[in-house]
Length: 253
Ligand code: IPE
Ligand code: IPE
Ligand code: MG
Image 1 (spheres, rainbow, N blue to C red):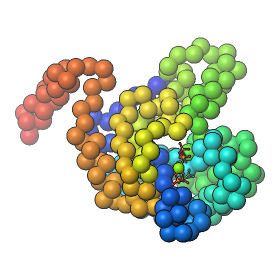
Image 2: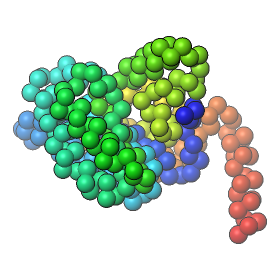
Image 3: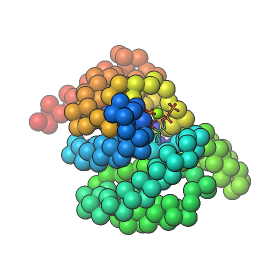
Image 4: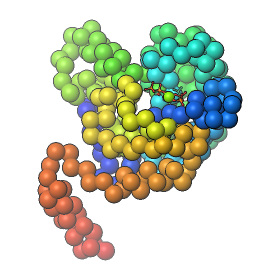
């Protein structure tokens, strides 16, 4: 696939990415173990997938486990692995009924055979679905992605261009994200979609991920709809480019 800049000129973003942050703090506020926060995080993801389907979002990409999250306590890491495997077993049938196609961008090396098997099975079971793509980034890092793509091109003896690199990256099956939401109050990218977010609109919210719901998503979508995406052009050029299209609609109305 060739280089795919964000394609959406619509007010509803075609591709929404989310850094699902704040599970640990949500749990700590309730004197609960961190893994309990991650469990509620899974519920929040179910809500947001449903709401995204209803709103006609075509691609949802979530950050579930970063290259750096291995540094957490061992029991939290194994809790997250269990949640992924059990969550897939529980959710894949209904995701599939709703036309959701699953992908797991990330480094499979370093994941246990049980986890890797779960990821492949879920990808295969949902491969025919066409309504929405759900990318669950797991053992993903933006730097890992650039390096693995460059290595692949080098191994194949191919020229490195923006198009060829984009085509070798872990999200080459979708256009770049239009909107990136980060919950949990931190204002940073934490090694998420470094290459793909070149022209993405960012929305940061203090809402902790387990509290995120359809209303919170709608607030982020409303903020996105207010943004003017210029892609390097001037505001006047953007307005001029939109004007003929609007006149056209009136003519054919
Ligand atoms: C995000 O929530 C989930 C993962 C990184 C797996 P955190 O676990 O980072 O929650 P906080 O930031 O500690 O509140
Ligand atoms: C980013 O959250 C990773 C995920 C949401 C999976 P972190 O909680 O790991 O980010 P930092 O460490 O606070 O930057
Ligand atoms: Mg965090």
